[in-house]
Amino acid sequence: MLNNFTLEKIDINAPIPEEETKRQFYFMAKAKKHVEALAEKLGHVPTCCVTTFGCQMNARDSEKLVGILENVGYEIIDSEKADFVIFNTCTVRDNANQRVYGRLGELNGYKRRNPHMKIALCGCMMQEPAVIEKIKKSYGFVDLIFGTHNIFKFAELLCASFETEGMLIDIWKDTDKIVEDLPVERKYSFKSGINIMFGCNNFCSYCIVPYVRGRERSREPKDIIREIETLVADGVVEIMLLGQNVNSYGKNLEEPVTFAQLLREVEKIEGLQRIRFMTSHPKDLSDELIQVMKESKKICRHLHLPLQSGSTEILTRMNRRYTKEQYVDLAMKIRREIPDIAITTDIIVGFPGETSEDLEETIDVVKTVKFDNAFTFIYSKRTGTPAAAMENQVPEEQVKEGFDRLLKVVQETAREQVAKYQGKVMDALIEEVNDSDNTKVTGRLSNNTVVHVPGDASMIGKIVPVSLDECHGFYYIGHVVE
Ligand code: 5AD
Ligand code: SF4
Image 1 (tube, rainbow, N blue to C red):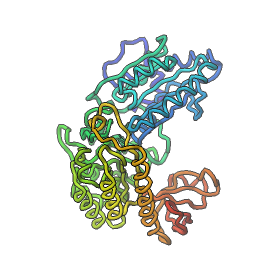
Image 2: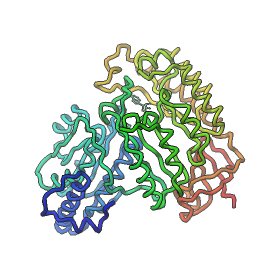
Image 3: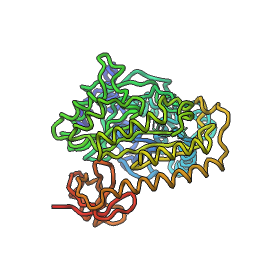
Image 4: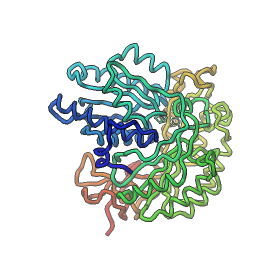
C-alpha cells in the first residue's frame, strides 16, 4: 500500500492516472495542497469530525474516510465544532433519517460562526432521490454530497469541493467497481472489520438496503486474505468479515468460492486469533459452514441469524424464503452441533398485516431457540419497498403493545442464556478501559458477552483468561486468572 511518504512524491502537475487506486492517490496529493492552504488561512491545522450512523458496514466506510482525511492533513477530532464535518448516514429505519436532519440543524448554527466550515453527507440515506431533493431545498448550507457506490472517490470529490462554490452532489445509481488498497484508519488497533462483499440481492420486502447498496459483489479471496495478512502484521488479532449476506459470498466470482471455503483460508492466517462475521441469512446457511465453525479454533462462538418474524405467513410476505419450522430446525441443529455457541437475532414488530397470533409465533420461536440476545425493531415504512405499498399497516398502539410483550420475553431468555456461564473461566479479548471506572477494563468473550475486570490500558488488545464471577443481566463482573 502507498503511504504518506509517497503522497509527497506524487506530481500533481502530471496527467491524472487512469488506474483507479493511483487516481485517488493523485487526488489525495492534490487535496493535501488545498488543506495546507486552508491551514495557512485559518492559522491552525484544520480539524475534521466523521459521525457514523448505522451498521458495521458504515463504520468501516468511515474508517476509509478517516484514512484519507488524515493522509491529506486534517486533524481528526470527536467534536462537531470542527472545520469539516461528515455525516455517514443510514436509512434502514426512518428514525435514522430524522436524527440526521436534527443534527444538520445544529451544524448550521456552527457554520454561521465558522464561515470556513465544510459539511459533507454520504452513506445510504444519500442514495434516496427524495432525500437529495429535501437537502437541496431546506439544507442549502451543505457543501458536498456523495453516496455509497462512489465512496472510493472521496479524495477526488474533496478536491472538487475545494475548487467549487456551492453544493456539490455526486450520486451513482449502482456500480460494479471494487477499488482496493486505499488508506484506512482503524478505530481500534487490535480489531478490524473487513468487507468481503458489497450490496444485497435478497429484496426482503420491508428493506431499503438493496436499493441503496446495490447488487451483490464479492471481493476476490486473494484480496481479502492479503488485507487480513497486512492487518495482522499491524497488530490486529480479531477480524469481522462484513457483508449484508455473507452466506452468499463468492457466488458471483469468476471462479466461485463458498463462504465456508473462504473461512478455511482465513483460518490459516498465522497470528490471527479470532474470526467473526456478519450477517448470515438463514436461507443460505450451509451445513458446510456449520462444519467449518465446529472444527475451527478461531471462529468465534457467535452467530447473528436474523429471524425477523416467527410467523410463516409474515415471513412469506417479507420474502424471507424460509418458514418458522425451517428457522427453528436450523437454529437447533446449530445448537446441537456447536453447544457453546451464542445465537443472536433481529426481529421486526408491526410488519403490515401482523396480528397478535403472528406475534405469538415469534414469541414461540424466541422461547424455543432461547436467543442469547435479540435486537427488536418497530417496523418502519420505507418508500419504494414493496411492504410500503401493502395494506393493513398495523396501528401504532397495537405495535407498541406487541413490542413491549416481545421485549420482555427476549430479555428473559437472554438473561437466562448469559447466566449459564457464571463461575466459568473463559478467554476475553480486552477492548477498552471502562468509561465509568478507570480501574477496570472491558473484554469480550468469544460468544460476544461483555465482561468487566480489574486492569489497565496495557491489557488492551490481549486475550486473557477471565473468571466470570457475577452475572449482571447481560454482562459479567470478573477477574483475570493468572
Ligand atoms: N423497519 C424496521 N426494521 C428494519 N430492518 C430492516 N429494515 C427495516 C424496516 N423497514 C431491521 C432488520 C434488519 C436490521 C438490520 O434492521 O431486522 O435485520
Ligand atoms: Fe447499514 Fe443498511 Fe443502515 Fe446502510 S441502511 S448503514 S447498510 S443498516
